[in-house]
Length: 398
Ligand SMILES: [Mn+2]
Image (cartoon, rainbow, N blue to C red; front, side):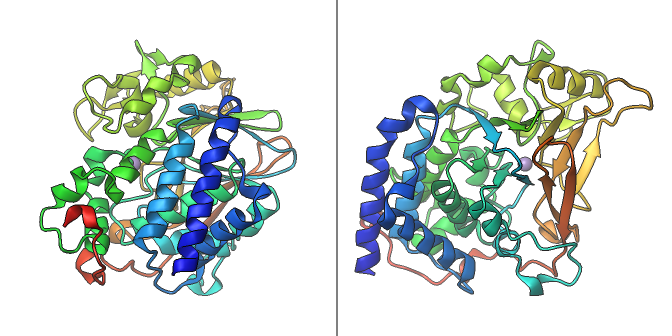
């Protein structure tokens, strides 16, 4: 254990020194120049990918999450990504703590289920220079939010130019304190603590570090494949005065101060990006999810595609029976026929709903052709934080 701890310190030191050098260019520091740091990240990645029941230590998780949080401080809330010529983009939707789905995609575990269309083997794809976009909702509901977040963060640090992690509505203090993530952290690392609010509020608790990391994630992404662009966010596009928000406002770094999406000073378009759904009404209409949330219409999909110079809108947020769905499709003869909304959902059998999980592979070069890769799992084990073996809580909470 002590050897690993030394390596983690080396990793953190390395990451800190490279933040300043890269902050102006929007490029994340790459561990590629540091053999030891890279090896360390790969060790964690493979541990989370291959161990039957991975239980990363408090120190490992603390180091990984704080390194990711501190790196993102320098980045814009709008991730702008150019997929290299000929390389593909893999688009993931909600994962919700279902480590098995993420591992299946990364390593294409053949025995997951006989009903998959084809294995993905994303890890090989990343080593070959392809790109992956994750559309948020990494935590809550499922049993392994800790491992899912740690694995995604390790991937981001290992492949900083190729992996994009967008913020979902569950990457928010007000939501993940209530829907499983905080309880999972407490049961794993702070079993002696009786009040969950102690873990939620304690400075530098793993929950607080995660919440600070979530606030640093981009809230939208603009991706270029060949001559084609896509606009991506967890819920949908952002609106101001009923029209798509200017891209310059999405690059406004003050968006990154909101740990709670519903904070009083947070602009409403911030809520739109994380919470909205495509609807069938006119323009913007109320959303049955709750007060202040909106649904947007087909004409606003076209307006958003025009405003952002993109072909389609990519989003997640709504469970799809087949893991993938297209909405706001054009009528025959509509000149804007390609402008539509794609919803991707990657948690199979989400909350026992028997749905497929899917990933969309958008081919490079022209960036228009795509495949839907889907899979189906047997029932996911019910979420039960009490099943976690207790570990020694860190000193600050004693
Ligand atoms: Mn969501």
